[in-house]
Image (cartoon, rainbow, N blue to C red; front, side, top):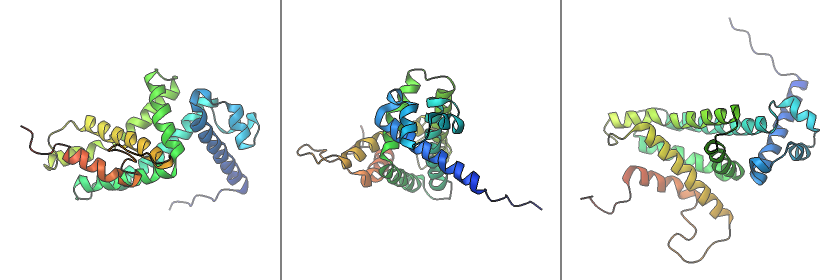
Length: 225
């Protein structure tokens, strides 16, 4: 018989709330200043705690804060992938559409994380990163892309998709989703533009429809010769 896990004490709950406040402050600072421009001093001021308190709750200073913020973010995206891409006997097209819809809604509610995700993570990884920090971020990013690989492989096996390379297709699909969202979410927040065929873009609500059609149908107007 397994014993029930004891409920957290008031002191443990207070520590959890304090750590959450620190990470919220770190996320806001990274979104505004970028990783290089952010400082632990500013994060401490936002969280209304002493600098030493941050080091007591999050190891690794600024790099540790950045990994912790992105870790929470990737956990939430992983949960969406697990929920909507899980094999249930239905075509992948519908499951990908559901996943893209939920990711779009998530980033609409967390525009700061979208900017950090698209701006900071690629820069750190392209520049060689900072040791353990870069490795941790690379592992989280690759793990999320890997969640798309088995559904694509099964869709190919069932004849839903052409025999495409599953891992490369997963990278393209996820990269297209994130890249399109940074444009449409920012467009929704900015004043409307006039003129041009793409004025206003599809809007974040239409991202799932657009990307699903793009990835599963292509953009050719007719049969390719």
